[in-house]
Image (cartoon, rainbow, N blue to C red):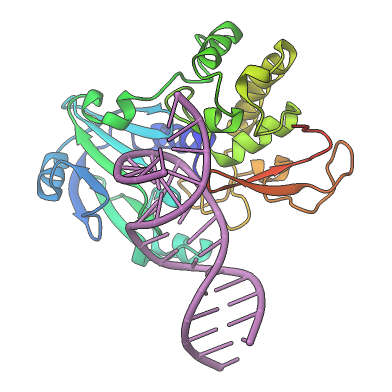
Length: 283
DNA sequence: AGCAGCTCCTGTACGC
DNA sequence: TGCGTACAGGAGCTGC
């Protein structure tokens, strides 16, 4: 599923590929439910004739800035992908079904950008100010920014010390960008059990966790994100992410732990699979 | 406050 | 072979 590294991968590619292009036409097929605001009619009308000024990211949201000052905000949800330049052959080669194309932006140079989303958990917004997107307004700190220091991390942890560390890391209101895959990886590498209460973490563990969050996210961006097992993430060329080979626990149940050899276990936490080594990550 | 459980959705895997 | 069912999960929601 697209988390910070996958979304950043898409942003970087789009920055290179569609910046300064002008939208000539817009087609929205089954996007009615995906478009959160404004109305689908307004959404389409207001995109036409606008030029792409810049591409930003906030947490797992891609923010496409238009020359009008408006922002086209895209959340990829579970299975959302953006293909550019669009070509039926690419989809066929990569096993992507075009029946899930929900939005097309056709540029004045006749190239086309397509948003495809099998499970339709993705979300689209067109707003003048980001504050209009409530879920973005609530997002916590960006873990890769310089302002995210270990001291700041400790301070945020103190707000929620009664909770479990995995729930905390999954919650976008504290630190934004981590999802199930990277939370599993980071906790494994830091040797911390996902159900550990935050207050029980030692200074040493907090320090390791902080380092691993930064290291893993950066490495994953370097590799162009991850496409794990049946997950759907693709870059804008429809290709899978390269970080999957470096994933150590996620979807590795019953395989030997790379650190101690004990089989990786899977438990459920808040309805999500959690992969861990019971030997290296003690409760 | 924190967490369980449900919802949205479709493709895939599995049991019979 | 084919059907029914469970499962995958980001995020928002209800309810205990």
